[in-house]
Image 1 (cartoon, rainbow over the protein chains, first blue to last red):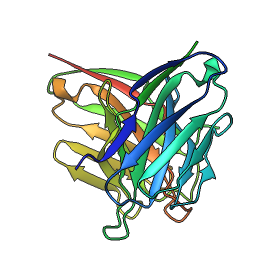
Image 2: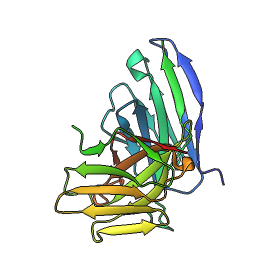
Image 3: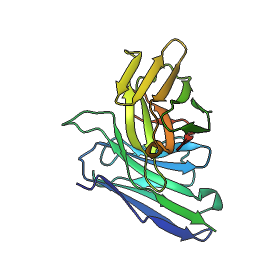
Length: 115
Length: 114
């Protein structure tokens, strides 16, 4: 049982390049989230999804897009990377209809540097 | 705006001492208050959580105290150990708001010295 798996773990991008971060969960969770973590700012919600085929904006959505075509996967895209998007990105999932709980499970993070 | 304010930013405690981290929230719709523990290079992991219908919850050496009228809650770590050295985040969510979205505090770096 892997939990929440993020790919890749590290990435360096040049300004203007695009990339996609992949998150996969094997807990049959309904909700999935993308957060970014910056020093002194905690974790801030970028986008989230309450079910397959649905997405919604969080606190800091600008410059990012997401898709949830399959229940177990949540993709975060950067169309034109900027240095301000240098951060550690965390994916999380929560809530199962079979075992309703509030606990969010986090992946190991993706450290992204934009130069 | 920072809806969940956390203090202190960093904390050094001697082994065996009590670590105390405080959080204050603004949104009265919040009804779930978890604490997450994060080790370097790892994702946050749930440590303990409380709902506003109780004023205190204890799990082993970890206790949450909750003051609904003051909109404050705190984490107490009793008999602190070097293995407790990590970053701690308080958070809050509104379970009726759709998606159980967590709003995090800015984090506290705890170091427990021998």
